[in-house]
Structure formats: structure tokens, C-alpha cells
Length: 440
Ligand code: GAP
Image (cartoon, rainbow, N blue to C red; front, side, top):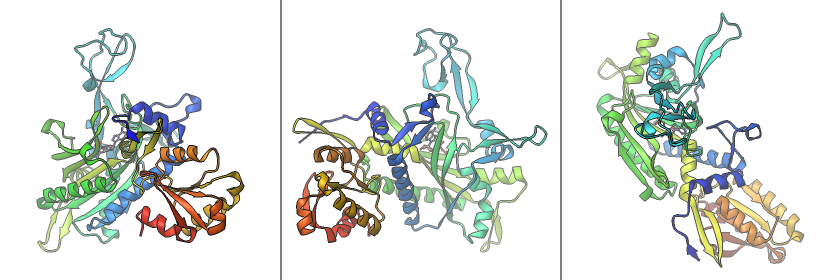
């Protein structure tokens, strides 16, 4: 076997996602909606695994973290307080010749339009990225609301409710997974920059004096998280923001970046937000969000350390990182070397011949009942083709049921990465799966 180097490309990932049902263009039969995607069965299963891995990492961090689900719609006042109405925009420029629109900071305005070759730019304007909508049935009762551009604000707005009802004490974290929406001027690179996406955000509330220490703690935790996902850590780096790059709420920020074929790009943002958010919401709502400290008998405004990563962006990163092409007997084997925890299908049951379909189906049903693994029963095409199909979606194990299985109640288990096949007893399959998939 030989391994081809540098074989992954954006085009290959897009084609694989569509072919195997990871991701589809949203509303494709109507021509699609730019920057919006639907997730097929494998994509949905893989996203669920990503959410579970993130949640598990927080639960095992040793810190107090509670989980929360806020609303997607928020009133105008909330976004005024958060600073998003005023500050959440990108610079936009149009080509007056071909009418194409660009982010002004993504192109060189001294040059001609990359699409039509003429130099006919409009002036640069700021474009707010929030989606605005109207709430209410009649013109008189209608008020404006916005689809949240980050999940974090609902956490800040509910900070007091959550702290009181969960009897939490500073320091503690509030974590949330949910959709966010940004009217990106130029959605780019497939899932990398979309208009509808999902975020996993942790807001860690602490004393201002401890905040930078807490930031270091979470940096280390997040590094561990990526390592546990078996990402190639030589392609991960932590990049400190320069002062002119900082978001309106942040006084120190690091990006976790991944090296894609199109360059180093942000995967996660880790930010010290200070007491910006709670102070702003206190000021704008008139409700005091400060906390009373029993020891010092004084009120203080908690500070916040934030870790924010996109589910879709991590999904996209993991596909790039796992993608391999290997040459086997002159043929190319595409294999996704995903961590078993992330693989959408954990094991596939393959009857060697048609005559064995019903026995294999029985085994599939028994294993599905005895485990909570997402299993696949694949009985169409040659066994070689079926192995390739499973390799391509990252299934760690293939279990082949053959004529000997009938006689001695054994099956062959094939490992995705080594392709080594081992004969095992059916009665031991559950243990073998648990071990291989590292589940205790
Ligand atoms: N609450 C902080 C915040 O929203 P951000 O850096 O704007 O910070 C955090 O976003 C993460 O959300 C990013 O690192 C990325 O993983 C994801 N993300 C942001 N915009 C995205 C988009 N348009 N499409 C996909 N993912 C996005």
C-alpha cells in the first residue's frame, strides 16, 4: 500500500459530502439558498457525535458547568445592549460593472474586480450582519427582532436566572449549543463560512482578578479536546489577536486555527470578554446583574472567559483532517480516519453472500438492541465494494458474516485503518466493539 500525499481538496470534500449524504445544498430542488446547507443522515449522526464530545469535555473539565438553551429570536434592545446593532458589521464593496459584491477587507481595491477584470468599485460601506425580522400580526403591534448572530447573548441576559435557579457560585460556566445566523456578505468555502450555522459556546463567569488564569486553564482544556478528537496537532495553532483585530467586547482573544489547504483559518475563538456584557446589559435593562460576595460583603460584576466553536466548522475541519487516499493494488482507497467517537457509523454488518442476508440481519438487530452504537447493515455489491463504501464514510469496523459463521458462530472483524481481519466469536462482539470504540 502506498499513501498519496496532499490529496485532500475542497472539491473532494464537497463531492464526498454530497455523494454519501453528509451535506446537501439547502432547498437544492429550488436552486438552493446561498450559504445555507442541510445535513443528511451521515452528517446528522456526525454532528450529534461532535456535540456529545464537546459536552463530555466540559463535564469532565472538573469545573462547574451548567447547560442552557436560549431562544433564537431576541428583541432589538438586547442587540443594542450587546453592541451588535452598532458594531457587528463587515465592510462591503460592489463592482458597478458585473454587480458582484465583495468584503472590502478580502480583496485589494487597488486592483481590478477578480470576476470581470474591470476596476469600477463603489465606495466601501458597512453592512450589518444580523438578520432582522418583524414580530407580531398587525402593523401597530409589530416590533423588530433579530436572529441571534451568536448564542452567547442569551446566556448573559439569563445569567442571574441561571445562577439563582441552579444555585451556582462564581466561578462557574454556562454552556450552550444552538443555531446562530449571520448575513455573511460572501459565504465562502462550503461549510466554512455560512449564513446559518451552529455554535458551541461556553461562557465562564469568574472574578476579574482570576480571569487570565482561567483563560489559560480553558486554553489547555481546548487543546486537550482537539487532541482527544485525534486531529493532527501539527495543523492546530493558537494565534493571539493583535489589538486592532479584537472584537468590540474583547480585551484578549486567541484563535484556535487549523491549516486547511486554503491556509490557516479560525476554528474556535477563545476570548476574555471582561465584564463588558454583564455591565452593558445591566446598564441597558436597568436590572443589576452584579453578584454579591458573601466573604467581602461586596457586590462585583463577574468577568467572562469564552470558548466558542462552530459545530459545522469543526465538522468541516474533521473531514479535512481525516481524509486520506491510499493506493491499494493499483486502486485508490478513500478513507476517512475519523476518531471512533466522531465516526457517524460505528460498525457495518456485511453478509458475504445473498443467502446469508437474513442471518446477518438478525445479528444486526441483536447488536443494535444490545448496544447504542449507530450500526449499518450493508448487503449490496461485492464485499470489496462494501469495504470501500464504509472506509469512505469512516466506519471503524466491518463485521462480515460468512458461511463459517453459520457453523461456528464466529465472524470476521476488519479494522478500517489497518485493514487487518480478525476472526471473533459472535458472543464476544459487544466487548470487542466496546474496546475498539473505546467505550466503557
Ligand atoms: N460569541 C463569540 C463569537 O461568536 P466568533 O469568532 O464570531 O465569536 C465563534 O464565532 C465561532 O463560530 C467561530 O470560531 C466559528 O467556528 C463559528 N462561526 C462564526 N461565524 C461562522 C460562519 N459564518 N459560518 C460557520 N461558522 C461560523
